[in-house]
Every structure is written in C-alpha cells, then in structure tokens.
Image 1 (cartoon, rainbow, N blue to C red):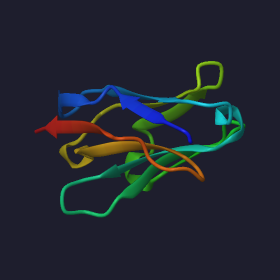
Image 2: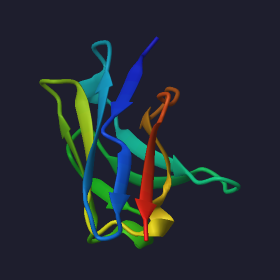
Image 3: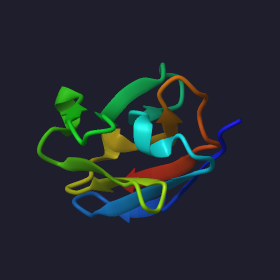
Length: 112
C-alpha cells in the first residue's frame, strides 16, 4: 500500500508563498499521475492540480498562474509551489497518487 506524507504547510500572509511536498513510498511513483486536492472547512474537497507521469499538468482555474505542480521521480516526491496566496486558499491540502488514497494532509492558512 502506498504511503503519502505531505509537508510544508503553515500560516502565511496574503500575497505570500508556500511550497508543499509529498513523499511517496513504493516503486510505482514514476508511472502514476499525482495530484493535490484541498478541502476548506464546510466545503467539498476539490482538485487543485494534477501532473501526469510524463509531466503534463493541469490546474483548477482559481489557481492558474499562481500555483505550480512538479515532480521529482528520483526522489518519489511531488511538489506544489503556491505563490500570491489568498485567504480563500486556506484549506487542508492532500496529496494523491491517482488510483490510490490520500495522504494525511497539511494545513495551509492564509491571513488577510
């Protein structure tokens, strides 16, 4: 079973930046698409960004131009660089290996 461990969350002021990391166990990482989801209090979980095994990416409209997803297959790690953060980006961010479950999540709080 794949284990996903997120890190890098925290409290930041609006306009600031954070970089989330997700380390995956096992040998499947390089062949699977990876994704970041988020869930704000009282709201449904939503897909933030996805990257295929070949590096193609897509983003939800509200983060385009501000967030960048990337991966390092040698390190079994996927990243989410978040710039120009807004209070509405506040949520628990989860890493996902497509076809598997979610990590435990990391809290991102953006103050206004």
